[in-house]
Image (cartoon, helix red, strand yellow):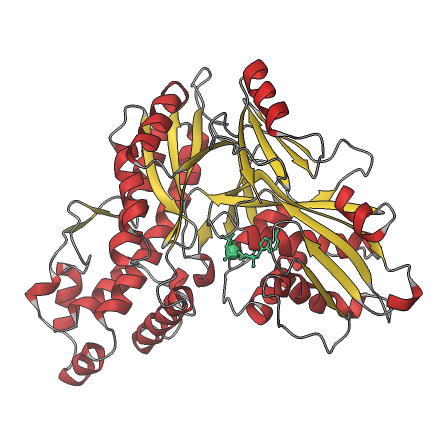
Length: 506
Ligand code: ADP
Ligand code: MG
């Protein structure tokens, strides 16, 4: 707010927010038309702004992000000539503007300031928060009505595809656009329909509620940089291979384990592929009983069917599916089943089952999908060794970022202290499901965010010129932006008096 006043010499007329999210389970399946179970975080991206009122800048929009240390201001024109470019962060904003160009009055231009307390690049979806906040900002500023949550999410997804070269699924934008406080979203990424899931809503009365603890490893391994698009491509290859035998399939969502195993058993007869024993259990589930390396398995029923096929058919199938494609597909198929089961168990209050499914999900992401990393594996392993932890897994795209843990409320302190002891660079947040994007009252003491986060955080540095501070108290996160009265001394006093622990971020 004050940054806008400083920069443009007047007060903003619109303020909006959109949240980041954590995905409890259902990873890397949104772009395979699968099921996901995320919820919105109390971490938010806020945009304040107004239309351009200075005639000399009539056609030029200007956006400033307080989260950027350099290149924090981007300028562009809101028309069909809009293209991606530098600074890179502004492409998320420009991409969304390009999706709304036809809804804007000709010659539209705006000025806006962005501030976020969603950790950037940590798998908590700061990108979707920025996109959805931009979409809501445009809708409120230009009074664009009748854009549904689904349409908004789709536009923001398209913005990320076209302006950030990220072929992401629809999960992040959907939850940021449509989440409701107190609930998770069981989202069908094919139909975009969702069911609101309330933890323990069908549990026997008196069942204590568990707590979700997010643990940020604060690492990001970029490797080649194309890991995510590679997984998207590998899944498409698996679908193409499966379609030769099952032409009705359009996405991995449509494939059963039996169909996958049928192709698998028809493939080359190498014993080296038998690292894991998988046993079909109830329904369409496969539960790993031993996990080492690939989950490629033999399935007796499928073998019988395959042997009945003609020589020609067999050869076609053998050449159709690589080991890699098999493992990627195996993750997606089992993850869909885990997610639906977890949503049900969460309502029923069967947190032991939910936790088990989360842990299986991690193993599947670690070995079949290969998107975990040493730091995440260590955090998961540490958590699983602690009493009261139902389950733990990496969350988000992987190769760094966060883990998500489901834990008994009375064991949270022990979990966080053990995680911090094993991995001192980590940061933990306790979090409850929060609401999706909305307008903020301009005269509110902004931004005050309610919702449980953490009383744990990094210690406060002694800089006096912090851009903004995120104050974490039991049950409340309060972000204070550009407040000149915040000095090391005043913060130290607050810590001493209220027991607040402060995290400083730029
Ligand atoms: P995640 O979505 O998990 O946080 P991504 O790599 O998908 O990670 O998106 C992070 C990128 O989004 C940042 O590097 C930056 O370019 C952009 N971004 C997100 N939030 C902001 C913000 N508040 N200001 C500027 N850029 C942002
Ligand atoms: Mg992202």
